[in-house]
Amino acid sequence: MYATLISHLFFCELRTLEIGLFAGLSNIEDSCMSALLFGGKEVSINTNIQRLGLSGCRQLTDETLRMLSLCPNLTSVDISGVTRVSDLGLRYLSCCDKLGHLDLIGCCYLTSSSILHLSSSCSNLYRLNLSGLRFLTGPELLTIAKSINTR
Image (cartoon, rainbow, N blue to C red; front, side, top):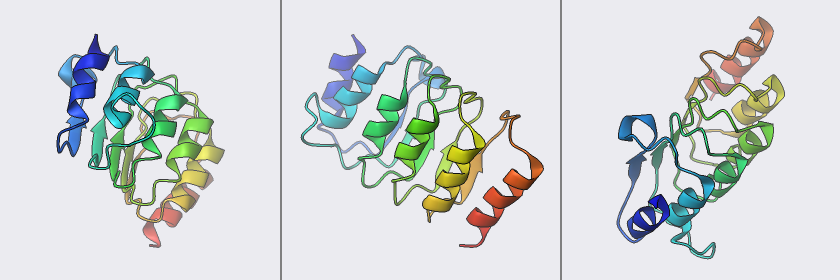
């Protein structure tokens, strides 16, 4: 249902898209994201997308983050409450050269090693929201903060 609607967005000059809880579309799946990002075929990617809000889209998985890693102009991603993403998905995002803002609130299957890897790999990262990730220790948070603030 959503895939058809979203695939039409592929052809426009879309730069920012807020789906998820705020738009009442929390049931979006990876197939819908594929339609949005690739227009139904993984040959041509929508290079206009810069900011994507996916807060609360609980059906999304690491596959969506893999697809997002192919977006050359991606600067901001909110995957707060996307509980099916793991370290693998975060490693995909660490390839996003322009990523500056990432919200990971409540992403409970992530570990400190993937967050440390992302914070050291994304040279433009200036805002990383880790609220609710209780597994992070003080020294790990300090290392993450130093890698972001020393740029």
